Image (cartoon, rainbow over all chains, first blue to last red):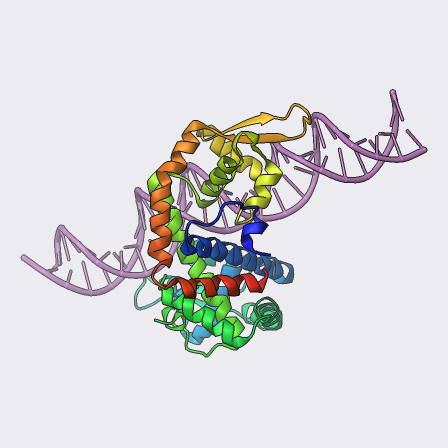
Length: 152
Length: 152
DNA sequence: TTGTAATCCTCGTTTAAACGACTATCGTTC
DNA sequence: GAACGATAGTCGTTTAAACGAGGATTACAA
């Protein structure tokens, strides 16, 4: 069913761009809500937290500063400090102030955080496959290319 | 620049679906943040509020119930009541309890709300054109078709 | 070396999202 | 017509998003 019918829209779209705008909004909203729900059921964490977990683990012993985490996030977050606060409180991450430059604070993956990612690997990959694997790779690649061409 | 580089990802994606998932997240996030910022500058309203405004105006004298508004929203909202509260408080919408069935409350567009949509028509259409009109309609239609085929 | 500006992060506060429980009203059934 | 469940909306509360101001530390320049 077309989005137009889903939202009971009777008027035609004013332009293709308008239609695309709505379709992107709705698709992303549904996708993220489903993903958020899955993560919540699995481990009471949010999509951003999952994203941070992967970023910090990817950094290894080097750790990551708040700024580095912010720029690596797939979706923007205006307050990385408190995002990390919650994750430290739950034991997934450790934070240490840097010795050479005492302004910066580095975050490191903790054992429970690492274990959590491992535990989530299978469900997450099942999720993307389930949600996006219903169309063939060629079309998916086309979708990716188009979205990247938009340069948002 | 590919998303992979934007977020400093060095590892390859595990699957095309994984990559598509990230690209959709990021594109939608940026698009919506830019849109939200524009609406805020124009009239201190949020994307959902703009959406409600259009839904309610589209209903004309008939008005819309909370439930109808909820199912017509492009992006889901768990508490339409308070969403409407804020809009009533700002004079964009009027609410009246239905006489025949005193459980239902209908929302109607108020003159300032209608004026606001008119005032926003040009900026909004400029926005979609600016953000999504950089690629040709054929590709946009392809994008729409693909996202709708996903059935999210 | 001593201001001065820049950088990195933190925190207070306001506003909204999310989730459930709850009230009011209606339709249906016995 | 009284009881029951279903329906429509409201509201309390917890948690997080958003924004901006502020504190600590460092780098730079005179």
